[in-house]
Length: 48
Image 1 (cartoon, one colour):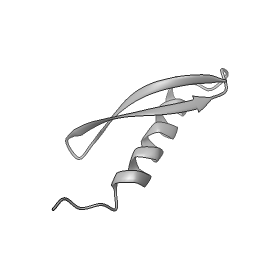
Image 2 (cartoon, one colour):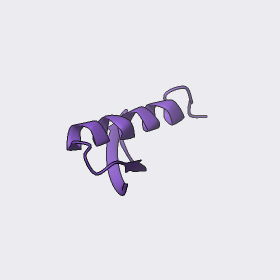
Image 3 (tube, helix red, strand yellow):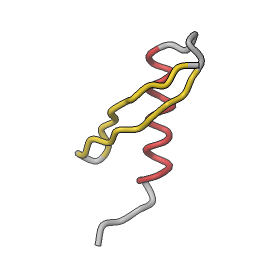
Image 4 (cartoon, one colour):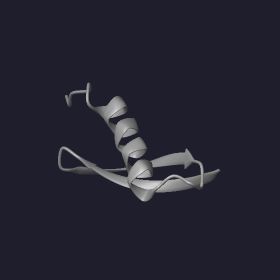
C-alpha cells in the first residue's frame, strides 16, 4: 500500500487529499479515487 497526496481542482478551488491505494493502481485510478473523495466531502456543501 502507498499513501499519495493528490491535489484536486473543484469549483475553482484546489483541494489536497490523501489516498491510500495498492502500488499496482495507475495514476489515473488514484486520481479518480481522490476526486471521488473531494466530491463526496464538498459537493453538497454551500458557502455562507
